[in-house]
Image (cartoon, rainbow, N blue to C red; front, side, top):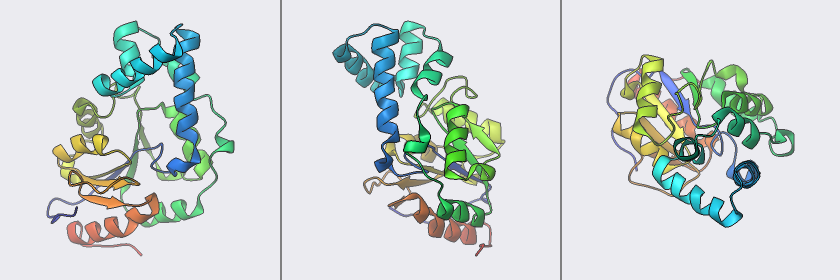
Length: 226
């Protein structure tokens, strides 16, 4: 769904990391999900069935397994983050020159907003060959373990950036994660999901955000970069 886009000058392009900057079909998040299950069985002693049931509840109640385990089992988040992100990125991701070129053409400050750790984000960005485009990484640790889709995480993002919602474009592969951003006035772009009325724009893949953003820049900022 698209809507008229009047408003203040755009300053920030905020992007989710996993399954947004690279395709879901890479399988990387499937591996991370597997390691989350292993963490719960190996570190905490849950049976596989109990771990899966808890994960479903934590996702619905807290937004992430990590937050649920912190709230209900007082785990060490650093141990969790190190364990679940101990994955061989080279086997799943390749450098993406087209993504690098696209990001170079978008004249906004680019920010990563992730429920993962900064270390994981930097490794992914380096592997994709786009780390130099992201001066700001706002990970779950920097947000004091508030995570998407908790509205407080988005408010903290705006405070970190000293920005108002309408000055930001937010890109994610999850409608659930886009709703709080839109409620704060951010322009929302859904990548690789089903068309939804709850977001401003829907595109099939990350490279397809460029024409949308360039049009918004022309409308909001009065300029566009070729």
